[in-house]
Image (cartoon, rainbow, N blue to C red):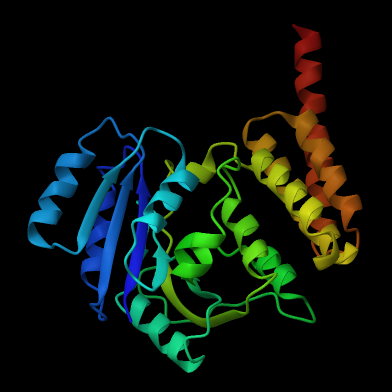
Length: 297
């Protein structure tokens, strides 16, 4: 069993070393690391060259700047492993990441499908992942739990037939999982083997919430029969709430209020509704104070 790890990167020379080292430190060593440079203008090439000299399992490809979906698709095309994993250039694997996937895949008799692992925000967290579980379909489950690409492992043949949608720049992984799960099974373990490193430069931190909503609506349109109205309400409410928090950070309180209202009424029975109402009232108060200050000038 061989794993191909696809790592897209763009101007992350100051961060990517730790990601590469986390692959080099894997307890299971039958892997290749395919780094796809999305047209970096920093010293990414020189840095990666120094790693390649030390370990021939690292492969390096360069493309014109075209976003990460195309980079991942190019990585998949150049992969030689039977199983494809993913890693972002600012995150890390725990040293047992691939070994845990190997165990899970063998446990399920190497059945082609979507496999994923637990997420940790800390390097040495030993707790098990907590999922939103219930009588959901496979597609509903991955949408409610937001499974990012670094947590996934997929048979190469599946990915050659189901690529990342290059027209989507946020939530493209969620959209791909929904297509894969229409025809293939879902397997997962709860051990936290992927480590998400939070920092100000994360690409998902730059106003990605509106793009995420666009992707969710695209998924709903193309997966009408696979997602119940109840689950749609939950997902939309969460998306609206995330957008409201984005606007609060930008101090755009009118827009924040609009999306808070949408979030509340999309799923009024949500346990967070009281908190959202309180936040809405506080947002309105802050906006009123700003209007009064403007008027008094």
